[in-house]
Length: 157
Image (cartoon, rainbow, N blue to C red; front, side):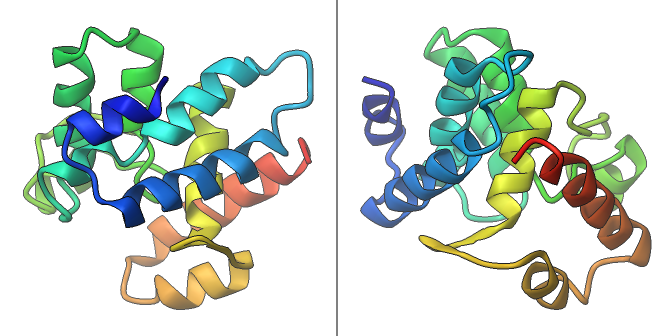
């Protein structure tokens, strides 16, 4: 079972509960036949696997390393590495002290998981407006990217 990877990585019960809530919401966007619902479910459950090591922004990088160490498929690893907000450019990642690499979600499955994660606070589903208010300290272009992702993904619900 996929949740066993979260436990092996040292994730808390709270992180696992959050991941389940993100998966449940993400699957509401995965009904379209062009979307790989199995990939969305796996990626959503594992998106915060790096929180077994760190709760900083680098949890996405740590999660990618964890996924590779477990031999998980590359598409799942990409979802984990690209789920922060609406993604980060290489320059943004570098400015935040992360590896300077593009971590923008590209595939529909990556975008769905990033969006669902934006709309889940703990285990509670929130509105995009609440997410943007909670993200007021982010640069404007990052908030705009988050809102554009919202508009794109809501077409799938």
